[in-house]
Length: 260
Image (tube, rainbow, N blue to C red; front, side, top):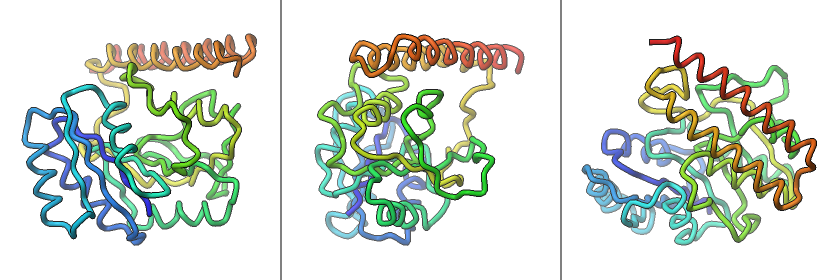
């Protein structure tokens, strides 16, 4: 079974389409866990209605006071019953009905796989003819190559520390890095876009997102710092990846300032 964890906060406009993209999957052995993070709109009511209309146990809903996406995802993980976990943000959707089926085939074909991701619609596929790419830990350090809504991971491979609950930006990247640094298995990426934002929100490039960009950058730098503190990065490599990350931030910040 694959447990699909959907954290939700004020997503009444997109939640139904999000859940529908899971129900349309050709891989049908799934449960959907909607973890409402204290929504103040009609999201919780929509989630409960979806649960009531679905076969018993297919969609389960949990609610909490607002505490951030990490807490909501971790609650979903704790309540999950599947051997595999898939993550999907409530304003995203899967755009291929074969997404889960293709990812589960990668697990079947690669016994060492612990995480299989895909490309987000807003990103470009890698310039290679290969469809399934192995992603070594060192390559993961240059950027977060695994959008949360595209990830399927073996539940038993997750460390005790899940998504960091005191971190609201780059918290998914923190978990992937923590998992990758443990060297307990390999990460694979399907080099094809299979998820997207329903509202087509840009990752960056709009002036209103400038402040959010800095919060994301601070989260990413924190991730590298923790790896260094845990002696999972050498000092030269820590300086290299942190410097590269900051240069990427400057470029994106300039782009957001120049565009209307």
